[in-house]
Image (cartoon, rainbow, N blue to C red; front, side, top):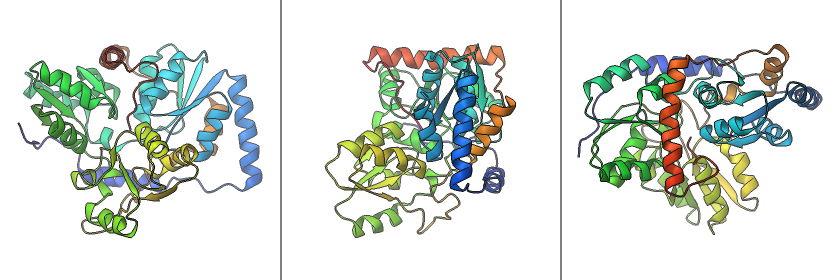
Length: 362
């Protein structure tokens, strides 16, 4: 088994600065009258433009509710893209981050795809620049390249497979049984989790999610002592010291299902706090506690809030629809190659009996 190797990286300082810049651009709260006025205007414009709104679990609850109220969808990024592809709308409006808009465009090249904010990034995406990643792949050209969905279209185009967090274990186990050596990117924690549980020979790119990296095992243990009856739900982008304390490790959609299924009446949740809206709807009688991002070694740079997800709001959605702004474009050569790696995963999912919805990821 090969241990994680140091890889070329965008400086953590530059990612931290991008996150800080995003925090300064969060829109002010709306009063009830303005909120209702915008919701009414947005509903009218979506209908007039034959547009469908797809929203990620981590965005503002108003956007999640609005997506469902107008015939759209709330989901993980690949399920958002699948829904947009299968919907008869001419325009897909993505409430999420940049790679989600690109993924929607990859699967729906003939549709107009709009993103609420073009600077809504992702630290995993930023931490895996396409040129550096391609060079890293060339240096390990004997390996099958597997990339997580939280990557740019160009990185997906360089990959053999795109995976989601819920299908990663099954796919990597399948490739390992075929004798494949793997190159994994970009999330080192998810990669480590998959490698430990499959025994696969994996070289890991060394990026992290700034939200999940802030969860710390010491602080989580302290919260568990305060609530010994609580079940612990953890996203696998978290550090191993957090994952090892979990009752359930899974993607966003898997965690929501676990919240509904588990007998515990109290749940400690280690992922971005936008998920609480859907999770509370799925398990209305349960108490949800945010896993702490404080403790030894924690800086609370994120405090379970993704700064780029917070750039999605009613104000930006209305502006995008008024001006037909922020259309997503993907170079056709990149798009067509990325589509191959995504659809390879979808075919595998069907082969192992995961049909219908795309298995969830971040």
